Length: 187
Length: 291
Image 1 (cartoon, helix red, strand yellow):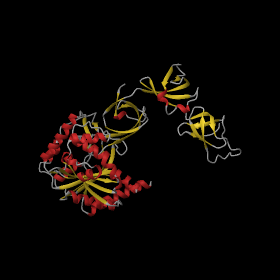
Image 2 (tube, chains in turn cyan, orange; image 1 turned 180 degrees about the horizontal axis):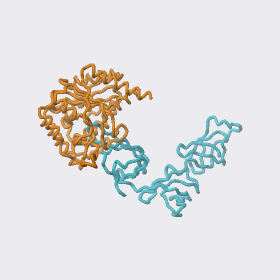
Image 3 (cartoon, chains in turn orange, yellow; image 1 turned 135 degrees about the vertical axis):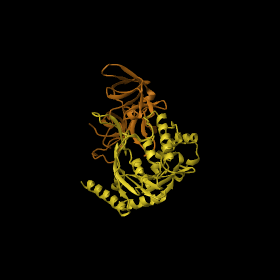
Image 4 (cartoon, rainbow over the protein chains, first blue to last red; image 1 turned 30 degrees about the vertical axis):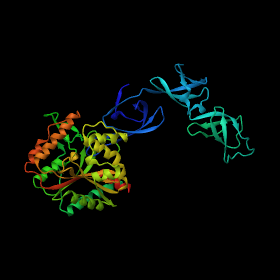
């Protein structure tokens, strides 16, 4: 990968910082009347997910990160690895279970996900914004309560626990927002 | 349309302010034979007379030197409102062209000039508590750093702990970066704030006394709006600084030029004792509008 000068910085550009691939979230140029310009840059570390802030001298170059985001279909998991397929090339990628901590509860077989590759190795998976999950355990529903006042915890078939309205019962399929872990309907 | 009228009204008030005090409005050349030698300001280069006798000219980045030629010839107190042009400037508050008010007052020292700027601000409707902090006080108060007595290596360590780059050739550049990123944000709560007595290494074209240069910058709610000097008077000092700045440009592999010796020559007799300030009119207007 090449190097990028601060003049090429833009949102979404992937750089290597402290050994990790990072994506630029915002880039602000500061130029004092007397004195050198600098770039104040906010980045997301693509491995740890943390946001960091760095300041570069304008004109400075930073190593680019070979990061690709591909749409892939989730196939199955065998307990230790999760399998994804690129629908265009039919290439399959195996991702280690340890990298799936935040998303494992939202993966539904056949769903299209975004898989982020760094140097051709998968580093993270982003599930669709909404997924359909099946309730496998929750307290009995209250007949007639369709207004959904309050709520109750429900365990889904993927293991994730979501707050659902009182009228939801075991065996029903519900729509869950994967960004907020919130119930967002039944269809 | 209202903003057009507001702007015209503001310019009228500026002219009235100077008229009343007998400060004369001038127009100086904007298309110059020599570019600025300031290390971190780039002139916009123009090719002219292509069909006759092609020549390189430069748009002025500030009317400073041309106005100082007038001062050296005995013009007395003068002011100018004009567009200035700077290459490689774009961003949040920087543009290739902006409007500058520049004025010089004979026999004013730096503090008299700061008081005069406050009077002008009040006339233009900028009110509020006025703070005056020396560069060292600002660093000590807002950054817990003894800026005049901290060496380059120690400053680099401080910068690293704040996630700032430390890849600098000269201490003044790191001081400026620390000021921009650690101190400036703290000035946002101060409506009118003067920072004065800069480290001697950042003297630009101002007089130096011991560790400090008699220079100020004005911040309105954290935004840098003006830059004032107790002006250097003798031609040799100017020549020395032009050469120093050009050497820095050379080391940074930026375009560099021979210093503007025409200016030095015209200054032979020297400048009368005076203080001068440049005020960014567009930034000033946007600060007034925010209030």
